[in-house]
Image (cartoon, rainbow, N blue to C red; front, top):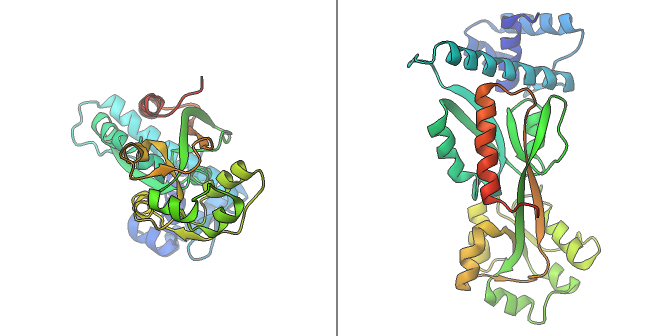
Length: 299
């Protein structure tokens, strides 16, 4: 059996990144927090945190952190089942990682539905679809939308559908940089707009289009779906954008597809516990049902 106070101290240290802040949150001394974490490490005969600034969990600590979060959700869900009419019950804290493009398209409207349907305190951590999975493995979230098809131990990866990305620009930009169509030469000299340095979509697109890896090209970074789209519309560059978001702009002619025959499809998955509690199971059903209405499904 784990000691509750030790688990609470360990979780607080990782969440807040320091022993001092954890002590303040739990209203105990810094020494008490340190002793509890050390006792937990001795009981498990392994290091659970790296004592740096900020404090982070070790690989085994991440496994334990997932257990702590699951245990907390189980406790809150059990109280809800035993005392369903308890009006003063605090909302269940739920953290999930969602990629920015999903959040700005199909997942955005889902937030209101989740908050209206479930008594939760929702924290959404936004990251690239290739990196939300790392948030789950570190125990920071209870579920995530990710492009990773393989689940970690204790979790499942449920297919949601695919987001299609189109390479677009303004008509004026196309005329200036690609009057005779795209080639490797014009693609690397024309400025491209990427979300951030983690964004691999443009690299994937160019490799898919030309059959070779293209690493050196002019690029701007605008780390917001809105800022990126505004940059495209302002003629600052060409970029990969989700079809769900730019469909109206293509219809009006404000933007044009540069290579209609070449799109990048990104399959998405909802990673969640295998043995889900009733609350988490209901949330998974809501998320997957909504996603499958909004995203492209395999034939």
